[in-house]
Length: 87
Ligand SMILES: [Zn+2]
Image (cartoon, rainbow, N blue to C red):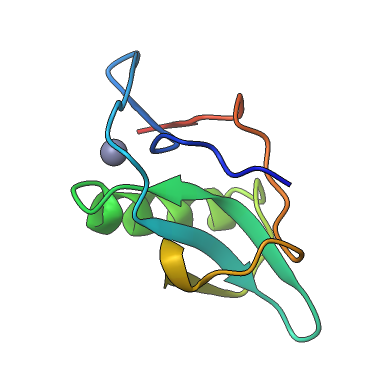
């Protein structure tokens, strides 16, 4: 499974072109759901946005986790590179 090679954030209609540094996931009791990847610049803003998405029921409830990309294995990762997160 390939990870996107760019940050999953879209800001003001433009895709972020930075390389991803963190994998964003939502941790539930027995499951971990990958939301996307983010660069360092967007890390704080995306965590605020994810809370809003959780309140709106767009992504699973649970603890939002950021993992440094280099530390992440590939087998538990699900992703859709076209599924960008609009800030
Ligand atoms: Zn970014």
